[in-house]
Amino acid sequence: MPDAPVTPIIELRGVEKHYQMGPVLVKALNGVSLSVLPGDYISILGPSGCGKSTLLNILGCLDQPSVGQYLLEGKDVSRLEDDALSQVRGKRLGFIFQSYNLIQQLTVVENIEVPLYYQGISEAESRRVATDLARQVGLGERLDHRPTELSGGQQQRVAIARSLANDPAVILADEATGNLDSKSGGDILKIFDDLNSAGKTLIMITHDEKMAERTPRVIRLRDGEIVFDSGSPKPATRQG
Image (cartoon, rainbow, N blue to C red):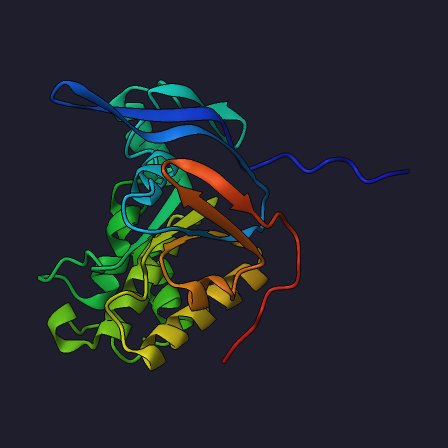
């Protein structure tokens, strides 16, 4: 018997995003349709102004389409109210940003715990999960350090651990190595490779061709439209 079809974890159907700039209607996204399968590892590539950030905001439930549908794990989240969108973000999505977005007053382990606080997880369980994740990204000896005591690469490791705290369905990374030197950036990408090998679904927004070469699937945006999609799967490029 043939294998049953895999249900996409993400489906965009004819998504458009419009902004009114004075008398001009700007289409930041124009008819984007996209399916992401569980375990996909994708780079979304394109120049500044092509719609990458807008697409990321929609995928991350930080914004809503003007036109079209967004299905996350089969549920249409296109028209949810803000509170419901916030719940989806907190429970099903993980975010990694270029600027790390850590809370400076908190330690490594406390920063990782933040998403769990909003899920009502007990203090003891939150500490256990956060400590395990810190060790997973190589920060087991830095649990009580604050962001100012860490290098950029270490801060991004904290951000990665924090993104995993709620066991998200999808991890979204926005120019995650943009503030790092080549060695630290390579270390972060190796962590991404390992997470994907363990079954995590990752979508990376980038303008870096070399970074995009690592992922099995590359999507290129131009003027708010997908102009290239390499499809999936093909073997990932595992670099050091």
